[in-house]
Length: 224
Image 1 (tube, helix red, strand yellow):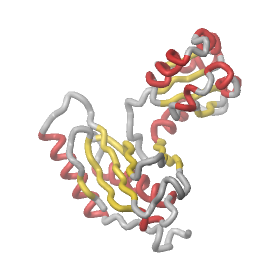
Image 2 (cartoon, helix red, strand yellow):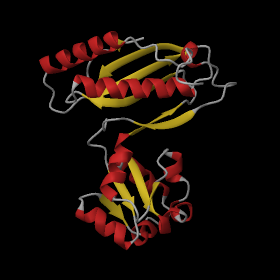
Image 3 (spheres, helix red, strand yellow):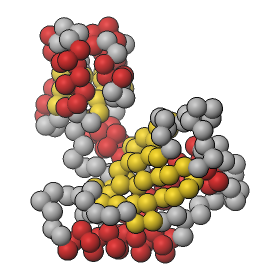
Image 4 (tube, one colour):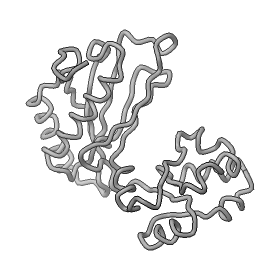
């Protein structure tokens, strides 16, 4: 599948997408919410049988951070916890994790508290032993952070990454931005997200029934 292959070429009409963005922004501006609304991409699939066809999952980094207020917790060695502390990022040491005593309720609570986790080299292999399958079940197994990486970069990367995962239903949704972005930033994010998703599908665009974008409180705007 080279990029010129028509089955994977973007079938999004850019003007249609831009129009949808303008409608969403205007709508959101006219009803000032007390919080920054996210923009969600909603995907409806067709000719796909989650029972038979491969259930796909994949992650892609968007050009702009879709969820700036995403919360992250570092499960770190001493150095990483100190760095996280300095940056105002949630963190837990091995000792903190041991205190949870593999209590399912507490681990579930921890998984709920943060959107995502990062873990130091030294800790990542111990997670199953320390916490059991709780984080994994929540779809939040930690990403790896090494001492060669700048923590703030790693966190931005994590905040920029979205994940598509087909479970049993033929519809998917994920945050691709927010209403304080410029039209161009949101347009770029939607483009990358849609084209990546389509590349995961068995028959590419033939599996796409509908695409909508909507703000948290707004109504869906169809873009495909």
